[in-house]
Amino acid sequence: MAEKKIPFNKTQLENIAADYPTPFIIYDEKAIRDNARAFYRAFSWVGGFKNHFAVKACPNPAILRILQEENMGVDCSSMAELLLSEKVGFRGEEIVFTSNDTPGEEFAEAYRLGAVINLDDIGHIETLEKSAGIPELISFRYNPGEARTGNVLIGEPQEAKYGVTRDQVIEAYRIMKARGVKRFGLHSMVASNELENTYFVETARMLFELAVSLKQQCGISVEIINMGGGIGIPYRPGDRAVDMNLVSGGIRDLYKSLLVKEGLDPVKIVFECGRLVTGPYGYLVGRVRHVARKYKEYVGLDACMANLMRPGIYGAYHHITIPGKESLPADKVYDVTGSLCENNDKFAIDRPLPVIEPGDLVVIHDAGAHGYSMGFNYNGKLRSAELLLREDGSVRLIRRAETIDDYFATMRFPGAPVKI
Ligand SMILES: *Cc1c(COP(=O)(O)O)cnc(C)c1O
Image (cartoon, rainbow, N blue to C red; front, side):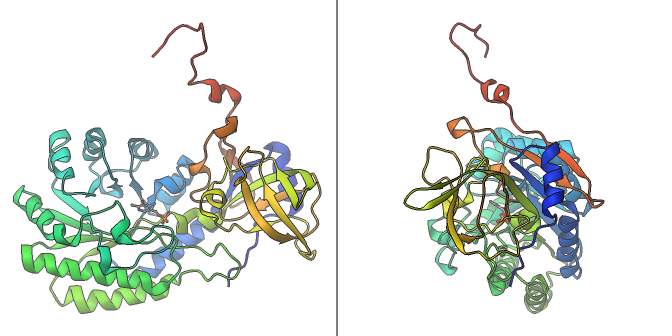
């Protein structure tokens, strides 16, 4: 079972909040590094193992630099993510470009960077060729359709907009081989926030079997198998984290029985995990403004859905700790809200918590991935700062909070000179 602890006590957090007003997201550097190392240790049997961190999960250069130091690559899906990765110093095949509905200029940029381009559709071959050219190495995203069941967050594969189908996949590789491609990758991502260990072993089986088919039917030796992201994290105290050693062991057995047997060894196995890498190690910290009694009791924070969308859009559970009150009984029931004029602006509904008073700090767990990055400006809300809790206990500002000038920056006020 997951233990929902926080890496600071109330006094430490009050000290941080004295320097950086709430709300903010704070990332735990040591925990990110320890987890990255454990991930790599679990797959140490794979030559050239890499996790290409999904930039969309946490697009902050300081975090990306830490992950680079831990030997990770990046997974990008947009121009901004490619440019950000380049600025941080990622190069060539450290970058995977897994996009969909992709414009030509993004292919051109990925090509210029020497990224591994992962095509989402047969029709994209033409866009790639026109905008950039055919690279030496190409990969396709495979969507197995009814051959696999999906999960709640991403839905059933046959309903998903991603990837080439079972009928298309062999043809897709044949076309690329005929166009002169020399090196091949293969990718799939069919689940999101999945906690079932065997799911990932089964994804490996599916991809390994497909690699064997590609060898037999097209004479292609796939050299990179990309398992995608989607490894879940234990958001709820009752959840159990994915056992990466178990997953790795299962994949290793299949590697031997399917790939080695077919003479496909060595194949580089990679992932594109985002959530697993930073999710549990980022905390949204807000302060209670009001406690209101209506038909229910509400705790109103200075943070809102603009800082963390997941509860509002997916009904996702995020654990909440009230620093200094950890050992008090959770004998009150509250809805914990923000100040948006949207009734789904709630971090928690009917959550048992200790008695809360205005001024209390509130820590919302597991905001390190798909947290800040999903933020928005609805209702004129400004995105918060991001902080890094360093290994020596010091705190560094790694992104300032937005100001009202940022909010106004794109507007053209009546009478102002027209600029494009
Ligand atoms: C979102 C996404 C990821 C990362 O997903 P996580 O749940 O953060 O691991 C990886 N690859 C692709 C193609 C994605 O769209």
